[in-house]
Length: 199
Image 1 (cartoon, rainbow, N blue to C red):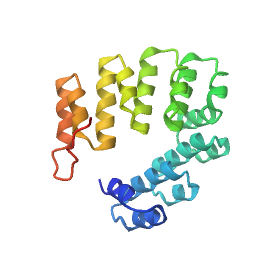
Image 2: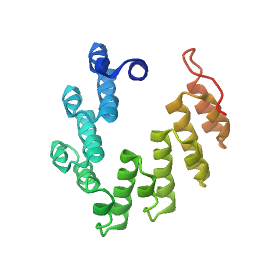
Image 3: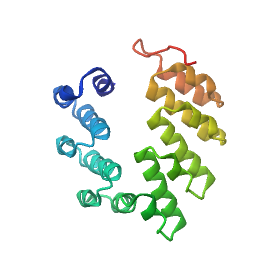
Image 4: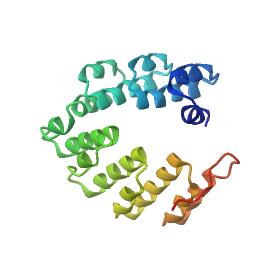
């Protein structure tokens, strides 16, 4: 996608300008959203046109910077707002939540956004714990985390996300489910895909 190429090929001082040059509104929003995740620059959220993506931008920065005040910018989705409030307290705040499902969700959000595998390990449900591990693997591009995932469906998802994140088709061969493996390989059917192998 265009925004991915821009973010990987340009120096940081020019990234905002490159996003602005994208004519397609959805792709421009996605470019600003991905850039905000990398830089935690609040001003980038204001450049996003679609409200749901703009609020996701505030959410991601709020969690990453542990700034609870940014949660007030989330107005359209109460559940998203509550996740932001609990997530900005980090693991300490998550541990204070009585409801097990909400507590697990809080640890998952903190783990994914802060790329903190120790937060995933606090999740009491094994399936959600492995989903969190897969998300951290994608964010950190750490294949060893995928190897730790025992659930086959989540393991496949982990390698699929890693293959997409690194643009490396070799991870597709590690996928157990044939349909998911085909889906992974189809991503690399375009000439621009990196089909180099991974040691």
